[in-house]
Length: 580
Image (cartoon, rainbow, N blue to C red; front, side, top):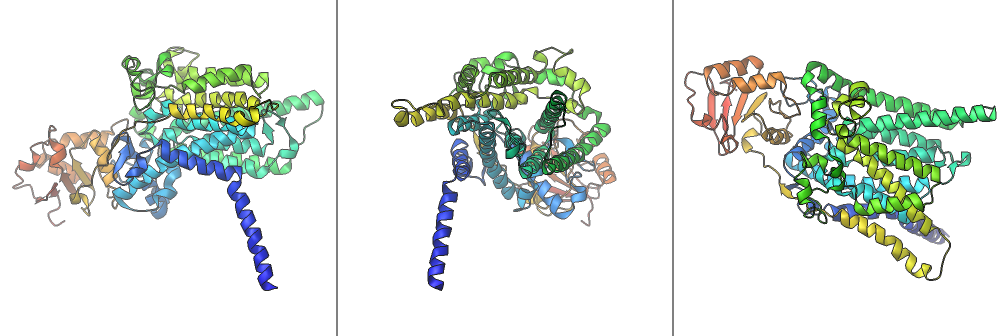
């Protein structure tokens, strides 16, 4: 009997495993992962030795993820006071932090692990974007083919190829996934409206949790998302009050849903405020960190930018070269959502599974998001326009790149396209449709993916000099300033020594003073000043110093300075404390 029972249990387990393996969401996640590997290739060909795009922002963000994991594992209370920009506090808030990736930062140590971690997350963010937009389209009522197009366009829109070095811009999947969960939790879809029997409080709570996580990745993307959630909450409240007034009776809200929303909104607001507080502190300490209208204007794309692809696009890059040459800042102004996506969305305005009123709302959303993404190009530097948000909406003066709001344009176009394809997918069967219909519906997906094929360069990750390992901190690495400091930040993941080096969109006054006072290093004035601010070690990298004020520093005398010089293969180390 025991043997027979064991066999029955094994058969049931096998059938359950087979059903799980064939489930739609299992297949979606698997396809998303495989697509991400293929569409970001050759990122995973050498994940320990190369970085996508360049060695600028990717090295910064590799450090950010590593620091977040290190700080949260060792001293969470000091997470905002990073090891860079010594002796300044709140230095982790000098840019978007990617703090939500801190759990990944707890795995592995050192620069190589940081590079591997970055490359893995670079691939996974594309998979998450596909899954999130697919889930949102399905929840709204789209068929599988339409949802797949929405997911592919959101993950692999041509404009995103220009952002290959900005992980905080690429990781937008949490936005779509949170909206999908919230819609599911509230029993709402575009096709069927509100259905009380479909309310799932657990999904609503999960949606708020994912939304809060998205904000922890940075306000460059998360700020607009927070305001979108506020507008959606206002719309839902208005609809509730309207129903109450229309029917003369207060609509019933399931207690579980009310509690889930109350806890979710409270948690989301709490996380947002906790994330925002250090940024307000930074602006108070460094007014130069506040974005100006002039900076916004510099990064505002012309309208033709939304029809132009970046050079990393395999299909459009070469063809749009002449158009890119007319743009002031191509990296932030090549904002093509996709030609195929645009055509499908236009079709979705005419033939769609969505109601006309919903199509008009989606089209209006596309128009508004385009206008905002154009920055000062639409409305100039007056009201109303993007500048209105900069001047009057809390937090908006911290964003200088309006073009990134095109992510909302892309998401809304994807939903319009999904509605068009859903009409055909769910329409009445016709002669020959059963045989050729699925293949026809796959074609738009393939065309969208072709537009997303990349030719992104993958460059060698900067190797850490052996001289930096184990030096007494605080340390100053020369030359100081410029994109080289990104490399120093990455190298500092080996033990996280306090370092003067660091690069942000503004230069702290203390760092500028150190740079100026160190121009003659090693000399009496520079040594005395560095000692006064607490620096114990100076590491000169001759290979980096050529063409800088420190190009001949290695040959300058140190007699009488009371310091010890150590000549190594790849660096010169100066111990300002001779006993150190």
